Image 1 (cartoon, rainbow, N blue to C red):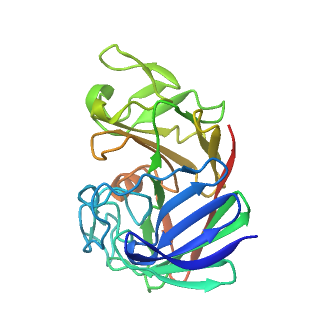
Image 2: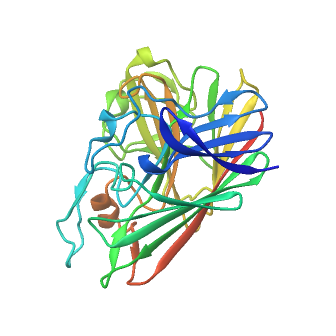
Length: 315
């Protein structure tokens, strides 16, 4: 039986969605952050815990200076930028990792579902997310972005779940993914736009690398790739061999055609982390997505809706 009950998390008011197979904890005051996702069949926590005190952050804060835990929503950009399109919003600053992750969200319980929403500051929108357990081992997240203003605007959204990862973790993608696109000029990965084979590749300095595996935090490295924008995918998974469990994200490729893959091996987070980041824009900065003509646009009064499913299975 699925239940939804108030709880506490690191001295923060929270809600817990629970079944015999899954426990999900959400903190409304922290951007409706999903702070815990426990696979009860293996007593395994899939989300990285806080490396700094868990507390509200001011609007416009640097994301990497905060707790670096859990699952946040990135909207209407990921990288900080100024709004690029002509019109009344041109030049408005959009903060690091977007506006909504540090803002308190309003949450309401409806039977065994938790609906949370937040209003934009730089742009006129209302972003809503409803979390429910679609089955004992499946979390369903239903999203709606609505333009509450009188002018159209462009945006991008991406999920930002910082999943626990270690040497026993493997990133699994559909067989059609044989190349990935580098978007961060870091370490041995060279210029943004460089293509690498997946999952085995060779870096720009000639080092053999297994991209679907995660190294220790002592490596002090990071990488960010996207699957090819010309080949939309509809799922990605993490498999932990030690726990014998897998976590699979599923989404509609026609609405979320882009997938980012973020791996942090001790550059920003104290623990190794892997993030599967389905998105409706390509990529990370709204300026770049707009220039690529791959950013969504909302007309006045228009709504865009999409669903993201998190399914736990045996490895």
